[in-house]
Image (cartoon, rainbow, N blue to C red):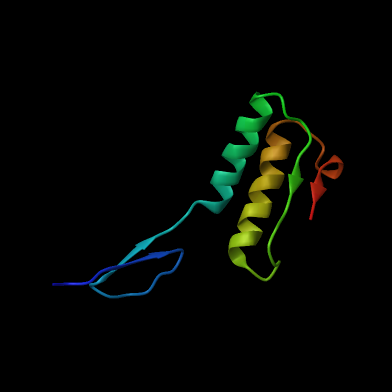
Length: 79
């Protein structure tokens, strides 16, 4: 029996490793737009460490989503 590993947001190379990447930026933009369309106009964003590229992508997506809604980013809470 052959074993396979699925790695999320990791690009290891091997015949037995399947890589999948998450659209951190686009996923957050979509969620912000979804909530905005449901009437939400104030957001709280809780981030992980700023040293993580994934967290940076998500925060940038949050900012882009807020701007796409025509909201002021300075009025949102970012933790």
